[in-house]
Length: 388
Image (cartoon, rainbow, N blue to C red; front, side):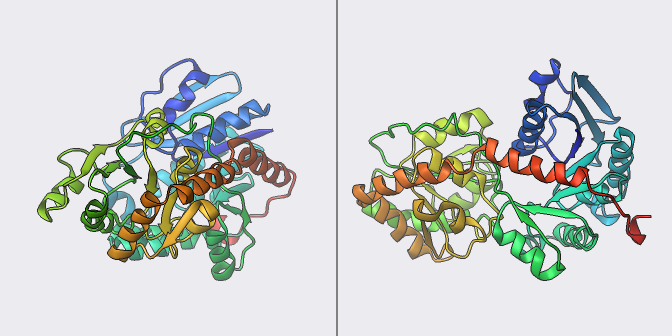
């Protein structure tokens, strides 16, 4: 079967298979690249189509059953949003039709999902997030344009899959469309529990210092944690959390830097060691469609604190997590104190976490997606009027 997979992806993961570098950074989404590799290992031909801000013309690389295409994308968000990614969508659709696959797997319900719905081959679209929630939390005009794009994508009939019931239930309720649930897969082999240092470290790993990720509440709670545990350290990693970055500037302005380390972005292969040296993982995000980092933290043996109303987060962590009101500074401080003060409970949650994480393997997720794609490849495709 020839599968065209389109979406943002970490291109460096494909370079060993290609035997050559790809002159584009791509995007920090390893899950899509992992699916490309898994589909290849299952014996399928794969055309991977993505975009990049750092290429001026299409880049093409091929080796064996893998073809990789990187299409230019406009760097300015305003330019892309105002015409709903028209240039990018048309280029992706043209490339999909030129590849002539048996089936398409498109990721996210924006430019990639819309481009796939306009292509000739049948497409499975993965609904990775819920745009209304993100727009309300980020309150940025860009996300309202994205919301409109998601509406347009989901109004077009076709196969859908989501990583959690939280997302799938909303698709079914608002769009009256069936939507399968396949949790994201995580490569767990690198996440072996490491004995943390004597100094209790509370780890946080987020993409951006935003209202949605809500790290400010954790920082406001930290002085109370330090009063109960003077040696405790809060370690913040991810974009915006580098020394001197946005998060540290905000923390300094509010006198909240005592006992806090700012690490900044981590390479994927540095994440296991980062988590393995911690005592627990704190995730104050207000909304998650799944939360791969939660699975990674559980695989590293860390109890996890999540929001009780934070989308899919409590369903992902189950008995390995402590679900609280992450908007309440006192509740966050109490939860951290409880887990640092109760070794027996900590140990129980650590064991539960490793058991739960084992359910989210890459192999299981890839096999389930392949089953849907194989069913779809054998089904006839009928275009809607707005796709003609």
